[in-house]
Image 1 (cartoon, rainbow over the protein chains, first blue to last red):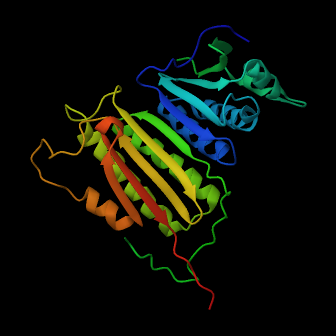
Image 2 (image 1 turned 45 degrees about the horizontal axis):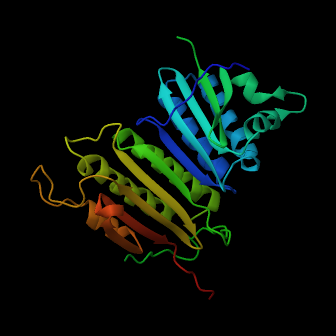
Amino acid sequence: MSNAAASPNGSPGTTRVSIASGPLVGPVLRRVVGMLAARADLPLDRLDDAVLVADLIASRAPAHVAAASVDVDLETADRTLFLRVGPLRPGGGDALIVDAAVPGVGNVIEQLADDISVHPEGEAEYLHVRLAYPA
Amino acid sequence: MRAHCLSAAATERWKPVPATPSPVRLSLPARARNIAVARRALEAIAEELALPRRLVEDMRLAVTEACTNVVRHAYQNGEADDQSALRVELRPQPRGMFVVVEDRGRGLAPSPDGGGPGLGLPLIAALTEDLEISHGPDRRGTRVAMSFAAPVIEAA
């Protein structure tokens, strides 16, 4: 896991998605992430990776969020997609990463992301994920 | 406002939504390209709830119009930039969806291009079960609240 800072930081160009924990988290997050990954001009295999990461976050994050919703900030750059997941409860960032392990496959988010890191902010934590495709 | 005219045979079934609504909120730069993001989120919810196709088409069109109004008219200097906010709330209802599109712009006012009122708001009104247009918080911006509902099909 890289400790590189790689995430949206609430800048004006950020898209924020807030979804109440429940059955809509996965369907909504995967569509929004897929669309923004396409906008970032990620090639198809990396777009698939981004959607897979979104699906894992959607399925695992509700157990670790600080409130009743899963909040994700997204930013795009040239062939790069940044995600910032949170606020998560204390320890929730690492727990979410651990939860993303799939038996026989390993930790999918760690394998697919170029950077993944946990950042405390106040009493909460945020998981930062960067997916990119080098030019 | 609009009576949906679907035959029982043509009406798809929709899933019952949970008793506790599960809202989805989007906060986006008010740029034209982000209208599609709101549409995609709407489509995802509609698909998950298996809402009737005709209702989904109405919702898609109305939400697109409301978001387009924000991008085109809410902020100064034509198309809004990345610092201009477009907020969309999507809240499933037992037979449809409650959608709020709001901005923090200049509020309802005559179009600066002098073109007069367009078809956007009348179109939204025609497509919605209920429509409420108001100021945003602090009387700043505009809040468009739209209710969409599928028709009740009574057993023969």
